[in-house]
Structures are given as C-alpha cells and as structure tokens.
Amino acid sequence: MLFLLVHLSLNLLLIFDDSGELFNLGANFMATNPAIKIMEPILGLGFIVHIIWSLIISIQNLKARPIGYAVTQRSYSSSWAARNMLIIGALIFVFLVMHIINFFYVIKFDPQSIGKVMVGNIEMENTYNLVSSLFKSSIIYDIAYVAGAVLLGFHLTHGFWSAFHTVGFSNKIWLSRLQVIAKVYAIIIAVGFCSIPLYFLIKF
Image 1: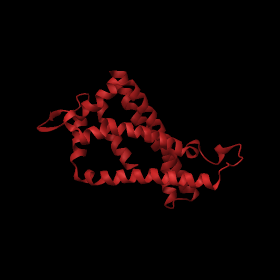
Image 2: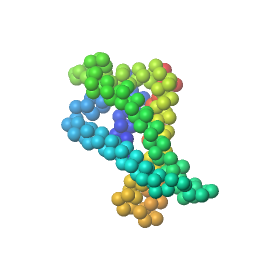
Image 3: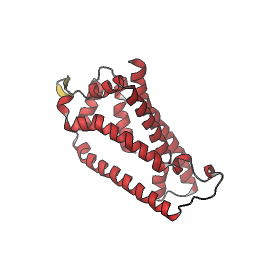
Image 4: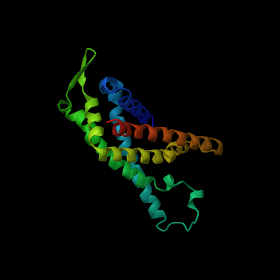
C-alpha cells in the first residue's frame, strides 16, 4: 500500500511538468537509490507470495463449500469487491504484466532503447519519453490503464482494511474506521492513476 502511494506520487510528476525534467529526476532517484534497490526484490517477492497465497485460500474456500450459500441479500454480509477479490485480482495481474512489459522490463533490461537526456548536469535515461509516448500514442493502453486503476481501487477497498483486520484490528470501532479510511485511500489511488492517461488523452 505504501508502494502504491510512492508510485503514484512519482507518476503524477508526468502531468505537472511537460518538459519531463521532474519525472526524469524522480525516476533516476528511484533507480539509483540504494534503499529502493534493496526494497525492489522484497516487494517483488511480496507480490508473488500475495498472488500464490490468495489462490490457495480461494481454492480452499471453494473446496470447503463447493455450493454457495442460499443468500438473497449478499450485499448485507459482504461488499461486491470482497466477493470478487480473486477475479479483480486476476484482472489487475493481467494489467500488471502489461505494465511490466511496457515499462519496467524496458527500463531494467533495455535502457539503451530509452535514450539519454541531461537534467542539470546529470545524464540519465529519458524515462519521461518512454512513458509519455505510450500514453500519447495508444488509446487502447490508456483505456486499459484507467480500467486497471479502477479495478485496483475496488481491490483496495477490501484489501486495505482486511490487512489490518488480519493482524488484530478486529473490534467494531477500529474496523468501521479502517473501512472508511480504505474507501478514501482507494479513491485517491484510483483517481490519481486514472488522471495520468486522461491528462495525455485530453491534452495531446
């Protein structure tokens, strides 16, 4: 969840400076920061564990009750996002793979294709050009990005508070507060990420 806030903060630099200098500085800082280099593989492992564990739990739940409850008003017992976490997660995973192929893989393993740019007296990869060019040239990717951001928002409305619930914040007072915070957080993340492709669609 902290990663998403950091990632969104960096990505919003795309729309605050059309010269690309701010985003390139931010991307270069992230790429050269020792703490980020240490956290990157840990975060990657965390994603893998999260995906595998969610599949295991979903399969166990399905085996425990192959026939669902005969409930007519399921919205009273759980939210739509909670009931569809696996499907939403799978769709987010598809978008994540697209995102990694288009950006992360190129930046990490094919940096020469990005080109260099001077910002101040520092030479760095022109990451802004890589990212902005895709947003400007591909309406399909823009739509997919917006869809991915919306799905991520739904995923977080349940995932945010349930993460705290798992570690013990389970009384009614804390749970209700966390559910409100989760909705606010999810909206900020979803709207923030949606604003980036929409900015390039509208302006360019």
